[in-house]
View 1 (cartoon, rainbow, N blue to C red):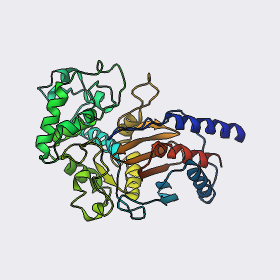
View 2 (cartoon, one colour):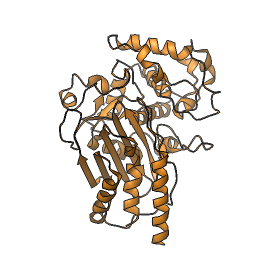
View 3 (cartoon, rainbow, N blue to C red):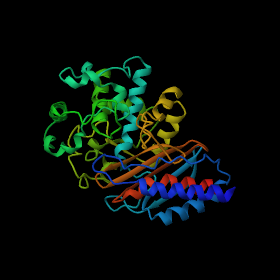
View 4 (spheres, rainbow, N blue to C red):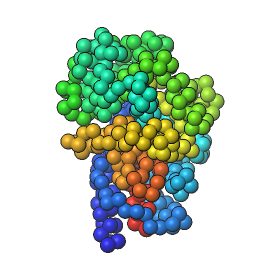
Length: 364
């Protein structure tokens, strides 16, 4: 039986390597969506630290890997340096790219729970000038089935680093609303950062708060994510600027308002573990809302995308890419494992870290 499980897991691991592809800006790499039998891990914490180490070494990933179970440290790798040449630690702030979409999606679900939003609300309610918005719902944005063109393709032409956020957002909204839909809303799954850029702006309309203030007040502060912040703060925040710059960005991701809701968060391994633990335990949104976030809303597609989360090897999570940073986070469906990995100047191997770690644990 063990031999059968091991062969099955090896096959899935190979499939995950094939599934991971690079992306630009905040676009995520396509992650492994093959579902393995959910094998309850049999080894102890002492056993699988060495096993994970061997798998990570074989993968050739250089960066930060942090694995916990039930809030206990299972494995830590800090192999490499940050953008400024400092050795990586669990407290190193890094850009998390599209992992930020989880925070946006959870905020939307929280507002739905409070009766301030509905998944059936259409975009014309918030953007009356957008004619196509009459047929596009909050649900369509959350699960990437809106058909709205990805704004990152035009961001360098529209965003201006010297302009204020309000001007940049207004210019980008005008561009978005002038574009034809890529496909009829609801008929396809197609990843578009525009969906979450719009959700971030809708959150501002509904709450009357700046998006960053809302996230800080409703997520960072309650969860004591004291080392987390936003792309917009890097130059002014001494802890961030020690490790980060905007030099690696490939498009106008550092322009004010450019990555709102879609890829705007800076965080640390410790803080990301707090986030995952709180999200899946009902401390951010209800368990029902978390289940909706995990649900595959495109069963007709190989990519199993929910609301800011997607199915991965034995769990759910997301991958991210911003500038030269690659990241992934993962919450297991068995064993209560959290996995977070991020690196600078990394390739698609970062999105294979969860399958590598979970296969090492499960084969014990």
